[in-house]
Length: 224
Image (cartoon, rainbow, N blue to C red):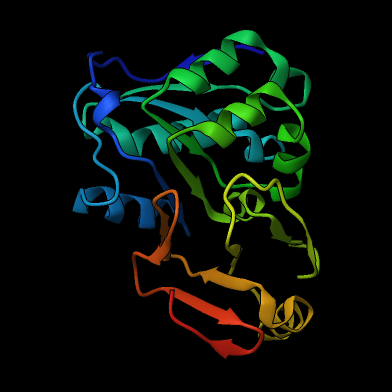
């Protein structure tokens, strides 16, 4: 499968001065608001953004990539989508090098389980794990932790372990969230992202970057 060039920008961002940051956002709207603030993510003219729409393989890779590209185009970023829809594509050398070399890697919303099975134990997955600047949107944010919340029923399962210290889920029914918190127990910190929710990881510490996030250990609401 190929790549989809989405915007032309100017190269030359000083990636050496960029600090490690991971942002998990509940929706595209939350991502737009985060970028507008310019605090957690500084995207500007020439920023080299790589979009990985793997989670949208069943609903449309191109459509998801174009939606995400539009969010960054207004800042003058150079955006390229990598059409990684299956495990075979996760071994393509070009895709691996683009993920490794990008200023910012963005993972689209979609099927968390498909994204996990596509990236696990692959060179692209390893490149995502080591990306110093990473954004994950919606359900696919849940695959990055050591513990993942299975969207089919809310039970905890094994995540990819790319970002330790926090389990992440998205809004679900109160019954499902209660089940999830019971099964996780008080040893695992769970952040549930609402549509405008954002959590940020700087390489050592997680913090809430918006109010639309509920953080719990067991059934107790805690600070993050």
